[in-house]
Amino acid sequence: MHLPTAILALGVTLLATGAVLVAIARSMPSLLGLRAFGVGCLAFGGAYLLRIVLALAPFAPLDVVADTTMLLATLAYGSAFRQFGGGPALARRTVVALLGAFALVSLGATGVFGAVGRHTVLNLALAAAYLVLASFAWVASRRADGGVHMPLRIFAGGVLGLGLLTAVRGASVPMVGVAPLFAGLGAQLYYGYSVLIAVVIGPLMLWMVFLRLNARLIEVATRDPLTQLRNRRGLDEALDRHYAARTPAPLVLLQVDVDHFKRINDLHGHEAGDAVLRDVAATLERHVRAGDLLARLGGEEFLAACSCDDADEAMAFAERLRGAVAALRVALPGGGVLACTVSIGVSPVIRARSAWGDALREADAALYAAKRAGRDRVLRGPVPPMATPSAAVVAVV
Image (tube, rainbow, N blue to C red; front, side, top):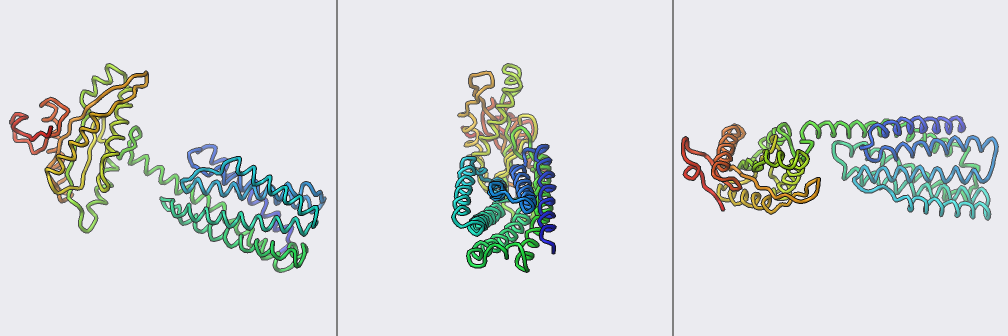
């Protein structure tokens, strides 16, 4: 392998990959970490091309610039992986401090030990950065969802290998000098492996982008955009998973409706109505338990499917939800606060997916009986035909 050609291929590949990732990040800014990945690729590619120029026309200050740019690229990758893993990006102050410290140490080592000092500092610093980067990617893979963990782990393994090889290079420079870094079998293996990592980075990043976009599309299809609760489709999918279990827990349906919602919209405007729906949804979500399902059915109606095999327990739980909403004070967009209440209809216990439709109708009938009985209350079905609300249901006050 002709080494300058390998370095040129490495630089061009990284520049092309970085340009594609930055372009995607500009059109899809919600994909956290993608821009940092692109910046890292651009920085690495530029540093490698600068190295080729410096090989033709050496200029010591630019050597430090190229070295610092390589470290910047590694820090950009690390910041991206922290974001992919759900953490914050690296603080700019931290990045500037690390780059500044590296540049000073590199200049000092170059001044005292010449090229040997410079390349020792560079390789050991890059080795440390690669190893930290591999750990960031591994941690991100453990936190990531939607299948993103696989490309993250592949990247972590590849960069771990690069970090170990770079550490060996850095440790060997004081003993063998600079020449073996750029000539011989060891140099060819190192740069060949680096080219392989650079070639793999692009597909890995695009793989992660595809997985994130696919997860986003699924979320859009199954989540209500206003409240971020499940919509009807999301609820159906969650129910299918629930009843696919070997021994699915029995469920009780709680149909929840915001009282006098049309009046809220008429008196305070639709923005206030949206604020009420968001805050009611958030309140319900805070109070449902692990294993419960919560969805917005549409308009001002919500449905909670709570894991419970005792009707009285379900009534007590529904009452806690009603009380939590009654204590809520919604901040209005134009100033001031608004109190609101909900009525809740409770179904009998259901133990099979086939009973879902009947249970939903009974919860719905109990809900409307609660509204006829005066609202802001919890009532239980089934409701006997033609019965008065007081005789048809049981209220918990």
